Length: 491
Ligand code: NAD
Image (cartoon, rainbow, N blue to C red; front, side, top):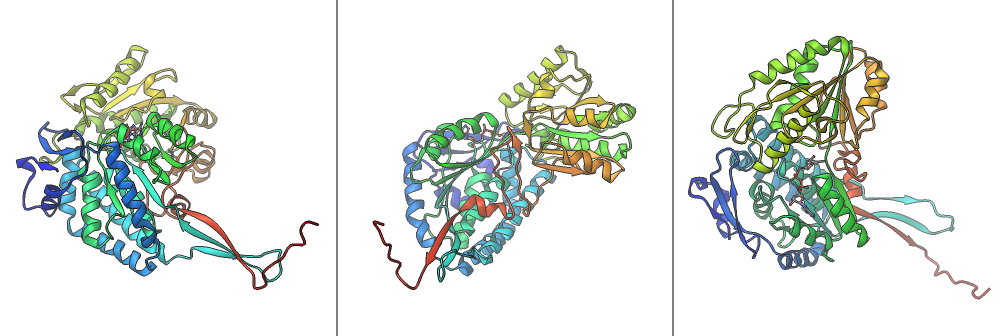
């Protein structure tokens, strides 16, 4: 049962749902607000047995759902979108309090979650196969997409509503069931909200199971026989473990992992526009997004102006409790992450990086930081920082910029600023990255595009648009012939 802390309760639509919610039978755990340390709610974590029960219920419900008419599946997704819209302020509050998101990030997340529902609601209307020619005269040869079955969805705390909805909505649209495990820091905006919305929308019982817990519960989902596919979003380290477990079971797994994204500013760029975009891309949501800019690669002739502008913007950003104050940056999500971010900065400074601004913190509030004199052997260059830190390096030629941009194990997203579209495009096309933007920054996503990365940013999986058909369905080849074929066998 979830116990809501007194301060969290109100006349909320979710309150009765949360009061009755039983996401697990394991140990109770408390969720605290990063900005204030105040408790938000206490709930029982799931156990591996709970995961097995949830997956069995999902597997039992799935075939009936796959047989439900496309119009009815789409109608439930549209209703879910309406219900989500109607309760956005409340969902936004939970998002801000569980994650520490500022208002703009919170609104973006709510918009995106609703957008995913709208996009998914169109999927049941789309053609789900093809007729293909056959070498056998008179044989009807059909390719059709069938649901994958039960999808195990594992999501992180940093954008829980978007990253959950980008799996749950298309997976349900195509006739699957889902076992969803958000991060234990975000059980409401990454889990309970989904369960409540889809229940109200009329989704049949059993199809969406939400379990709460950490790595042990995640691994139970991956190894659970009733889970047919796994959709994992999180760190590269955990993704490797998930991929190894799933691979041993011959289970298909989609891994959307970390990033250390390059932002290239050429000598002919609009430096003011580039600096404002670069500041946003490194500092918004405290830099805690997979597609944040982790490396600013700037032409020597404009680097001085660029760094000055970036530092000036960093100084102006207001830090505070994003739920109760109008601020630009909230807290780092927890002490462990803060120590990690600060450790990367300290070790880089020890190795020769220079702090232009920032690199201090009060509690979990880390000042936006600009580093120069960054070299390729420093942690600020090599590692995904996942904090509000902008390391800057300079280059002289476009080839050098490209080599620097590609000097990373990751390959999620990238950006190039240039007044010459052809020059920008030439560089963008050679960047080893799943997504690249010319004259826009790295933090970009839309429900219509195949989101995902190369290298250590994933295993080639893509979420969104047409890619969702690959993620959440399987091909089946069906043939039919009028005359039962006999074989002159043995020859
Ligand atoms: P994390 O890997 O620690 O946790 C992510 C989720 O995986 C959580 O639900 C966690 O409980 C679960 N988990 C952890 N270990 C597991 C295991 N061994 N087996 C199964 N599940 C396990 O990541 P995090 O620190 O919470 O999130 C930040 C990371 O996520 C960053 O690296 C960020 O770049 C990445 N991310 C990637 C994308 C993308 O689309 N590529 C989007 C958002 C975040």
